[in-house]
Structures are given as C-alpha cells and as structure tokens.
Length: 225
Image 1 (tube, rainbow, N blue to C red):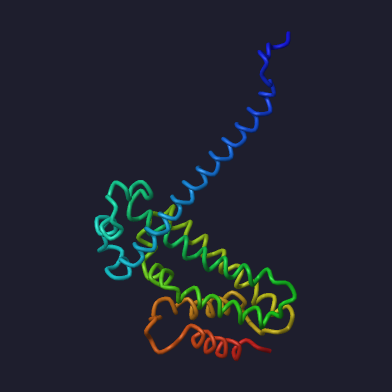
Image 2 (cartoon, rainbow, N blue to C red; image 1 turned 30 degrees about the vertical axis):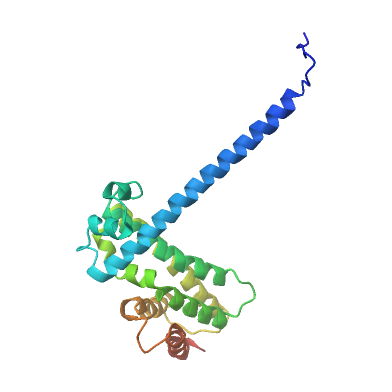
C-alpha cells in the first residue's frame, strides 16, 4: 500500500540516505580528529619524558615531574599511559621505528649500488641517532622494562639489524665487499655507528654529516674489495 503524500515530496529515502551519509562522514571525521589528537598528545608526552629522562635519568624521574612539565594532572597522564615503564617503552619503540623507516626507504630503492646503499644507510642512521629525542631515549636502559615489553623493543631493533645485514650481504654477493663473517662484520659496523647516540652532543665539535663521513671512510676501507 502506498504511503500518503499529503501533498509533500516523498523522496524521503534519498534525503534520509544523504543526511545519514553526511552524519556518518561527520562522525568518522570527528573520530579521526579525536584519534589524531590522542596520538599527538601521546607523542608530546613521549618527547617531554625523553627530555626529563635525559636530564635526570629514567630511574630518578617521577610521573609527577612529567605531568607537571606538561601541565596536566597525573590522572590525565594515566589516560595515555599505564605508567612510567609504558612511557619508556613507547619512547623506545618510536625511536627504533624512526630508524627502521629511514632504512627501509633505502633498502627499497631499486638499482642502487650496494656501496651507495650502505653509505646512505650509515648517513641516514647517524641522522636519526643524532635527533635529540632519539639519543635521549636510547641512553635509557631497556633492561628496566618487563620482559614482554623488552622483547618488543628488541624485535624492533632486530628488524633494523636484518635490513642492515641484508645490505652488506648484497654487496658481498655482488663482489663489492669482502667479509669473512657477515654477521660479525655487520655487528661491528652497527656497534660503532649505534654508539654515536651515547656520546653525541649537539654543541659538540662534530656535525652529523662529519660523523657519518668519517665512519663511512673507515668502514669502506675495511670491507671494500
């Protein structure tokens, strides 16, 4: 049975669908904005916490100090993190993610000669390591984290190591590099480069470009065929 029109345009289905669609879209936008705001605040907390960790050390830093510098309540801090260990964990994961993202872009470049790929890998890694947030974070002890979180951090670091070793292996296979033991050579290179995060100072005598250039010259003298 047809619905009475009462003289009105009964194209309500289309209007309702359009209105409902706009509502869904607005709701999605609002949710996305809330999620972005939440993620932005978490990142802000991580950056501020890294500063305090770098200044006082992780163990001597309190949640009260972090919340005070951020000008939020301690309960507000718990809205984003379950505690100080959780903050350190997210700082470490972010630091390793930044390194992984930079290296993966180099690994994915097709047709790049292994020597150039390794040179770029070292250069970009030094850039990441000399980023204030990264070196302040990596100076903290991941051993202070519970095993489950510690394993996740090590997994993120292992991902970087695998990509880095892959670059050197590619060079060996193409006859560009010589190495009696791929893994030991790779870890020796990574160990020396990663240590930059421990001693680098932005007001020190060396720029990131100068550091990476010296490292590259030294490394290539040892592995070039």
